[in-house]
Length: 88
Image (cartoon, rainbow, N blue to C red; front, side, top):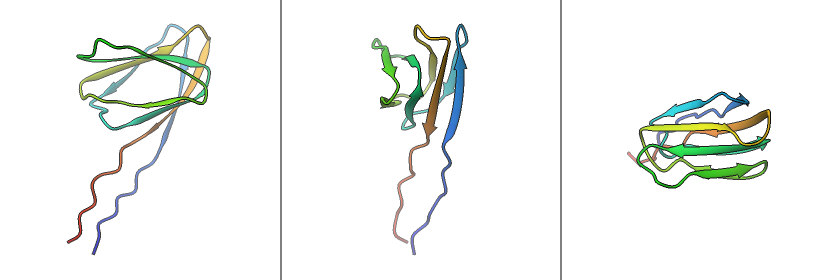
């Protein structure tokens, strides 16, 4: 028997001059539906810039910050990682 876990996506609207904080999001896929965003992850020297239609996977636990990039509004979807499914 295999264990299944239902995981829901979450849509977030981000407005200019606001930060969205994601705590311990390693494995979460962030997809930009509209606009453009800047992403920085705790303990990472590399920032990520994404436009509509692009996505990335959060690589680290800790704090991840997301804000709009040169647009007044961005819409992003967060898709949690699927847990490892083990046969029992």
